[in-house]
Length: 109
Image (cartoon, rainbow, N blue to C red; front, side, top):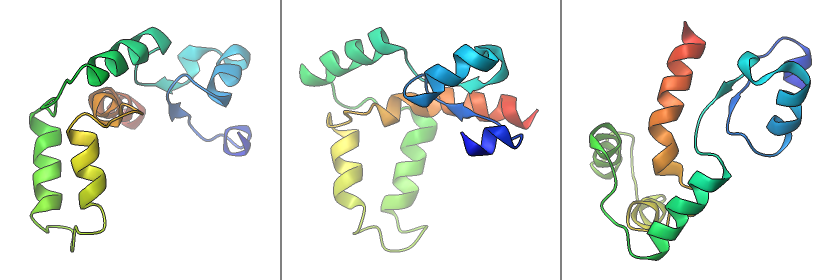
């Protein structure tokens, strides 16, 4: 929030302090991405019911690059990547990836 008071841009999901900031400055003045509460709950339900193999093309390429060692030794994050790409994505990081890219592109404009 301190960065916003100094002119920083907000790019984030509609949770936590972002909800309160949106009430004050208007959602149109923020770069929001991701699901709303109902969307999060629907995705979590699907994950809890066994949804797997949900990485899309570009995100799958990112994971493959990490697994392939493009950014160095991936042993540190291997377990995390395995978990979030195989049904353990409680914070729906993989699902937010594409809307994040769209929000970032809009912020860049």
